[in-house]
Length: 73
Image (cartoon, rainbow, N blue to C red; front, side):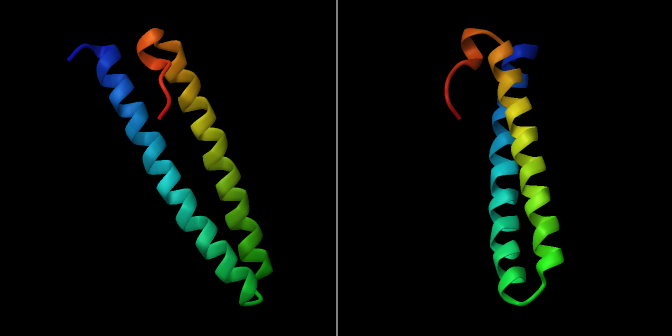
């Protein structure tokens, strides 16, 4: 497997992995908020935004690979 193909595979994996973590963070942010743990919920929401920003950068890296990286994940 060449470097571009391997990188594309890794990027896809990292994005999916980040999405799964972000979903868990969302669930726990909701639980924290409904349990009166507003500050913890805010910090979890901040983490979700950071994961979203990371995924934006990872998607740009996919696009930078050219036609092979232009599909949706």
